Image (cartoon, rainbow, N blue to C red; front, side):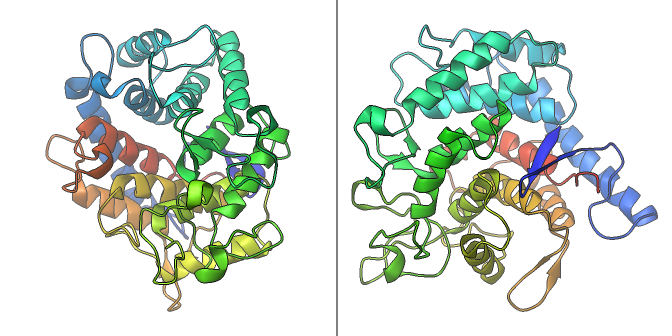
Amino acid sequence: MKRTHLGIVVVLVAGFSLGPGRGGQADDDAARLQQVASRGIGFLRSRGQAADGSFSGALGPAVTALTTTALLQHGVNPQDTTVSRALRYLEKFVQPDGGIYQSGTYYKNYETSLALICFQAANKDGRYKKLLADAEKFLKDLQWDQGEGKDKSDFAFGGQGYGKNKRADLSNTSFFVEALVAAGNKSNSDAIQRALVFIARCQNHESAANTTPFAAKNPDGGFYYTPDSGGYSQAGKTPDGGLRSYGSMTYAGLKSMIYAGVGPEDPRVKAAVKWLRRHYDLKTNPGMGTSGLFYYYHTFAKALDALGQEVFVDESGKRHSWRKELVAELARRQLQDGSWLNSNQRWYEADANLVTAYALLALHYCRPASE
């Protein structure tokens, strides 16, 4: 599995440690990660999948795409019965326009992005080559740009949302960028660079790339949901109308900037990392309590893996072997049947398949890439 670290692609190896050092402790850490992941995989195999191959099919194809990607990332073969049934189920959602989504959905970008990532992970023999090319073109056509009458001055420019008639937002845009990277787009591709225009405007950091009115009102370096359509943060507003930063979007923003080629010395990356050092937390989604906690875990892991730091130093100077700490937290939260659930049901995190997928995706990024 290839992963991007500040623009450098590295290859995951079978032998790894979860932090500095080698030897017995590293082996114990790796074994713990494998044990926790295996229990989650066991839940999805034995209890998560419906007869038609779906995982939580009532929610559309997105949960099936996430769970199947998680299985593939943990080494389950595309020809495995559980995975192959899920892939056949997802193929039913391929549309004539190249998108992979449920008919009548508002979530065309979201569903297609997740499905593209999934099929790319399963494309070892090239069987999904045309499907992937069509889905990539569909996503690029869906992006808010001149084709939708949006020029660069529009706060929606470069972003993606829940379909063409919905506002652009950072969550959807981050999945879009991830899908493009999975499809082989380089950081300097036109679509990713357009997305970067939108992503930069979601940050509470004033710069030449961000002249929105919100950054000056709350210049803390974190990220929020969207500057589009008057601006909105799931964490609410400051008294003077600023948009509050929060954890999951700050990790999503940082990850997306790295995928777009923004380097570690860029003031935008430095500002985001400074916010994250001030709010390092594995008990809550900073600024949101337990809302979206497992979504937060998977963006946390992806972003810090992309940042390429094995040890993350918080504002107080405390050093965190974040991979090991996240594995321990997920192990603590794992239920007896191997699944995970969030007691806070917001954003469907009462769905065991969705939450277990997030946890397994996070665990995948707890496996360090080769040095």
